Image (cartoon, rainbow, N blue to C red; front, top):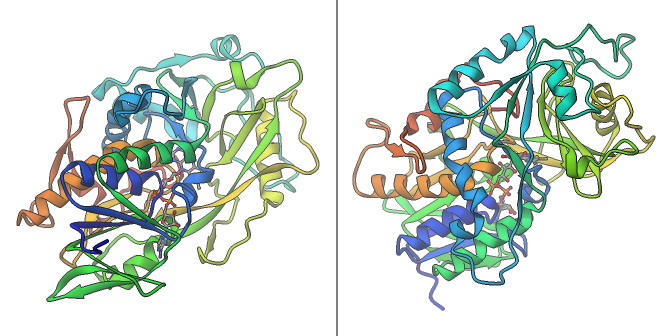
Length: 433
Ligand SMILES: Cc1cc2nc3c(=O)[nH]c(=O)nc-3n(C[C@H](O)[C@H](O)[C@H](O)COP(=O)(O)OP(=O)(O)OC[C@H]3O[C@@H](n4cnc5c(N)ncnc54)[C@H](O)[C@@H]3O)c2cc1C
């Protein structure tokens, strides 16, 4: 087999596979390489895979809305074969808790009204009707477990926003492998169990990559989709100096707690962006409630080396479960809380970088900051269009590419996700994006 290609994608997570899928569909000889032996085994494997449309920025929300129909018609997006085993999207709706500190969600309403995202304002009475075990109490600000004021309720929230177009994928690795299969059908090749150790250059542009085994893959286009390792790949390519926004690996934990007795949370539960308690939650298989963190100020952020970090859950997961118990007073919190620990590839402003680099032919889809699983289908299409634009001779830094988002009337100016942007102050600076 020849090791000459038109494009190399580094990383076979959900976004790497979606990018390889689109590049292969464009007729490029595409290879996707991953150090793991199966696709989707990086940070995607432990993703909570919540699909929602609310974001703190108009562009962020538009990108999410544009992706939604692909989750609703997953088989159609993939061009799936009859009898293929596919990940299943479960629509549950999503609450967003509103209180003084987040200005009662007004910005989200403005965005939703502008681009046609359906939502409803839910008073405590309506919240109880939708989810009877949910206490619509007001607890903000989130506190450390040893804070004597932990669990103190200050009345009730005035209301939540409720976005009916939201849900989750319970098997994010299967979803990734579904895209991998579609990419293979489109002609992409996967080289798995091989680590990229250098990004090669010739005549001032990208020439390919070298693998730990010594094997060389050659191509004029290389795309860094290495998740929490993205900064290491950017360092290999020598492109970090040309970036104003950087990425780092952030360790996070997610708690899995049994649903309160007598309530089927898996069937009747919902999702919530619950900054009021400093977390988010959704139904989890096995009738559990999954409780993540929204990085409240009282919790230190744990930046790590993505090649050396603690994969065990700690007291942090228990703390998140205790915060969840404020919302669900009948939920017991076991002494030893189960869950997962994994990494976000966090950017400085929690907004991704989908961009070229200062090295011709080297691109990046990085900094996904714990909130881009849902956007994988359209990000793949956008990366392909950006590569077409730049390889066609356009200067994306001087004249940023505008990508017409599918499924809606909106052109996304990719300056929004540029490596050279200033910090976006509209961001939530949390996993909400
Ligand atoms: C706990 C958690 C919860 C999340 N919840 C949500 C959510 O609810 N909704 C949402 O939209 N998003 C969520 N996210 C974010 C989302 O999962 C990620 O944005 C997305 O999965 C990133 O996909 P990726 O393909 O970029 O990266 P990854 O899946 O991390 O893939 C990168 C791949 O690159 C490979 N790689 C790295 N270095 C090398 C090398 N040198 N050589 C070869 N291969 C290499 C790795 O092995 C890995 O497989 C969550 C993330 C986490 C961790």
